[in-house]
Length: 452
Ligand SMILES: Cc1ncc(COP(=O)(O)O)c(C=O)c1O
Image (cartoon, rainbow, N blue to C red; front, side, top):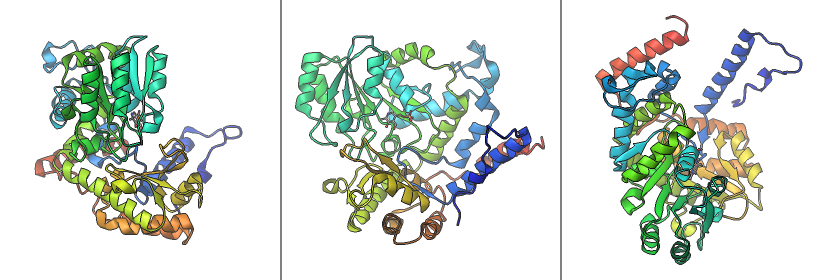
């Protein structure tokens, strides 16, 4: 089985002067090759997920080309200087926003950010230059950009540490809050085997510095929070949260913000015009459909993701691999961290897995102090893998890492693992939805195929 079929289609800009049609052929061939491979590999990159095909439709529909600035619920009362998405505004104001409000238990939701990082920028930009802002040290799993963005905004960065990657030093946090009175404590865990205890953190912060806003960036954890496998920070006392919508949650590449405090929601509204123009209405609609597809079985999905991650960790450890977090059952999230050195450099390990049809991260900044693999089970579970598949998946990973079998043979088994029920946790369209879907796909398919 060949996974990479497109490399010989490349164009040399120095010597080639291809026609538009030739470029189109090459581009479409590459796209087709990617699509073929995507159906045969297992993607264990924890920052990615696969979208349910129906949720992807808005991304190729006309509304992906429209601005949708006017969020007023009554189109007749609104300004509509950009009226192109006027009839479709319900997809944001009636679907995406209310679903997020309901699923997060949040009075205010903002879907303007294009990504998790932009949600972070919007949150930090609410505070003036000179404001003290507390962030997690990278050894606590904090995002690489958070402190730098705060510094660019002229803020005074304070760093919160902890005894291990799963806990903060609440004594240090209390002292820092009492003496420095940060305007904001931004809690982000991009590397997370164990979600932080937001209730204990919030209690500590509020006792020492009642005015400090506690913000939880749950970019990696959104799908698990919506499914109840990880506590919702807003229920634990956090003032606000933000997230990417495409990591443990199987949505489009986008970001969201949520809070129950109207003052915080108003601050986001104030900064957003300077940071975002179009918020990509097609992605907002795709997010709404992704939420609708996900809502009914969110808990089953989230619990299965964590169960699969724990099971894969256990089986990889049994095979002799150094899986972090043995004392916590390897993980309480979708992530696993696997050290392959000294047997194999992490980069080489990731390459071997890639050749066998298994995609993983190899990272140098995991809170382990050395390069290692970062795996995640969210996409695999959303696409159909179950806890019963984990022993075999661990065996295939072990074979790829040790070189016990040819990568192409392993890739064939990987492709077979993908042949179970696709998207088992997504909603099943009823008769009316199927009819509406038929109309949309006929219109889009006809246009793409040049027949309408
Ligand atoms: C905690 C956290 N915040 C923000 C981001 C950035 O998200 P995005 O890639 O959607 O911009 C990440 C990405 O890994 C993250 O883990």
